[in-house]
Structures are given as structure tokens and as C-alpha cells.
Image 1 (tube, rainbow, N blue to C red):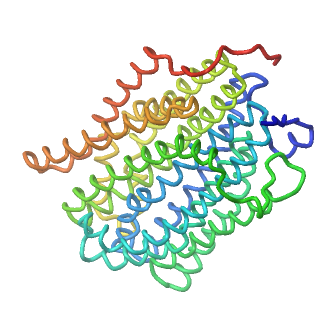
Image 2: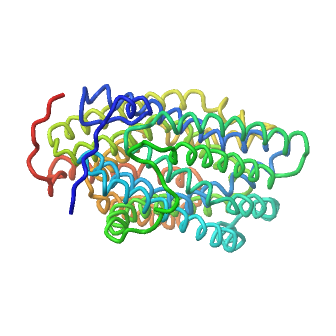
Image 3: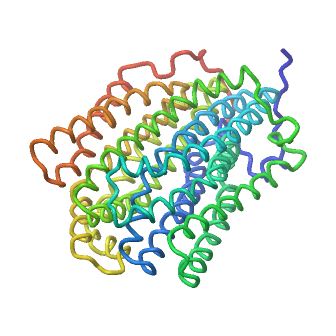
Length: 467
């Protein structure tokens, strides 16, 4: 096979492409993580805008309908988003290895995979909406609106999948700024459409889903306009979008375990929510509000994990063994410290945060939301540690390890624990404790794996490179 070398030019650097195998690892990780954080922040505004605006204009039942679908949406979408992360590892590795031919094939295969996945997700999501919501014990009062919101959301699921595919391509070649620009635009558009559809037109919860879909589709259009411009090492050509067998195998090998890991988390949360729903609509609303706040608060840690995966995969592609270890250590420590700072802030501001989402200021909703925050928040450092080590594993090409750990700890053990607690002690507080307990178990396993195993096995000794 002829090996085509990637030649980084000043023009490429100005277009956002960043070689993470050259320069100070700490500065590179932080510089990459900051735009990712801001991107995740604005992406979270999609969900937060729906929740806040629906809660303020349509009331508690509508808020509960939107909240009840959150984990179910995550369950479906997260699998395909996880495969996109796995695919980015393949792209990053070829980018770090300066293998332009396979880089281009991986990019076009990834897009083809995303298109097929998006269509599949739309069909399955729309078809299974009522069944899944019934399995989750969704309350009768909010069930019809939940079905509306969920179905309209999944009609546009292909936009969600394709945005994450495009973002994974740009992130893989070191560009974390461009996705930020597109998300700022689409997030502002989403808020404006929510206010128009829900606030002005009073169309109902389904229109909040439509606003989200339109906004996500707009970001995808912007991504493709950029990716299809000529003269870039990652230029996308419509006629070349197809499956390349060997590259598809690599994407599946690394992406499917990452997708399973995400889905396991989503499945466990769906099971948890189904139990919480049995305590009534106020409990459902409170749990949904907490999930929104946690998702928002955990964005800095997600930024570290995405930066870690790209940094490690690029450097391992370039055989920079020691450099990869240095970056991994810095990312894990930074993620853990950041998580605990956020945890303390959330713990002490819990009543105000929950009250922001409920127009009616329902005492039980606020009480339950605060109770969950006070139970869970101070253990965020464990959640951060697990996610950071998992991202190191993915970057090193060992996606199966985090998938197995998450399946055992965050799904099987969590479900068993909740089943036992609900049988012997029917108290919602003990359901909240399922999170810290299972985070602790996964952190112990990851600690042993990270420090006792050769997580870089399978790579040659590093070659020296001038920085």
C-alpha cells in the first residue's frame, strides 16, 4: 500500500487543524478542552432551553413530560454518539501517523455509518416511543405529552447523529473551535424558536422538540459546508461517502464498545427513572430537573475526557509513548479536581438551582431535587475519575475495557441494588445512593487497571520527535 504523508501547512493551522503530537502537552490539552467545554455548554442549552421555557410557559405537567423523556433519548442517541467517539480515535490515529489515504477513507466511512445510523434511529425511536415510556412507568397525566415530545424529537434524530459525526471528525484532527462556533449559532436559534413556538404561539411540548430538531439540522448544514471546502486534508466529497471494509471494521471495533458503554449508562438511568416514576409525578419532575443540572455541571469533565481521547490517540499514532502517559496523568488529575469544585458549588446552591426550573415552585419537587443533589453531588470526583480513565482506554484503542466496567458496575450492580432496595426499603433516597455506590466500584476497578496494567500494550516503543 502506498503511504501518503500529511503535510501540515500554516493554512491548515489557521483553519483549526492542530497536531497534538507537537508542543506542551498541558497547554495543548487545555487549549483543546476549552472550546469543547463551550461547545458542550451550548449543546446542553438545547435541553436546558426546552426545560426552562416549557416549565415557565406550560407548567409542571409539561415540564414532567419533557423531563421524563431525557434518559430515554440519551439511551438511544448515546449509542451512536459513542460510536462517533470511537471513530474519532481511528481518524486521530491516522492523523497522528501522517497516513492521509486511510485518514480520508476513515472520514468518509464514518459519515456513511452516521447516515445509516440516523435513519435507523429515527425509525426505531418513533416506533417504540409509547412502549418505552410505559416500561418507564411514566405517569398518566404526562404520558400523552411525553409521547409527543419524544416522537417529534426522533423524527429529526439524523441531525443529532450527523452533528456528532461531523464534530468527531473535526475534533480528531485537533479542531475543537469550529464545532463551538456552529453550536453557538444553533443554540441561540434553539432558544429563539422555543420562545416563539412555546412562549408566543403556545403550541405545546411537541414544538420544543421541533425547535431542537431545526437547530440541530442548522448546525449540520454549517458543518458540511465547512467540511466540503476544497484544499483541506479532511475535505469531504459526496461521491466518496461509502463504506471501506477495513476502516469500517476498525470503527466498529473501537466505536461499538464505546457506544455500548454510553447505552449501558442510558439503560441504567432509564431503569432508575422507572423506579423513581413510581413515586409520582413530582418525583419524576424533580429527577428530570436534577439530571439537567448534573448534565450542565459535568461539562468541564466531559471536555477533559474528549481532549484526552484525541490527545492520546494522536500521540499513540505517532508512537509518542511517554508523551501519551504525561497527557493522561494531567487530564485525570485536572478532571477530578474540577469535578469536586463543581460538586461543592452545586451542594450549597441546590435549592436555588432546582427552583429555577419549576414555575410553580412546588415544595415537593424542590425538596426531592435538593435531596438528590445533597446525596450525590460530593461524589462527582469518582464519576470524573471513571470517565477520565475510560477516555484514556478509548484513546489507547481499548474500548472494550470501559464498556465491560460500565456494564458490570453502572448497569448490572446498579439494577440489582435498586431491586433489592425497592423490595426491602421503599424509600426514594436509597435510589439516589445507587449512583455514588456504583461510581465508587467503577473507580476502584479503573484505579487497579490503570496502575497495575500496561494500558499502552500493543504499541511499539516511541520514536523521538522534536517539540
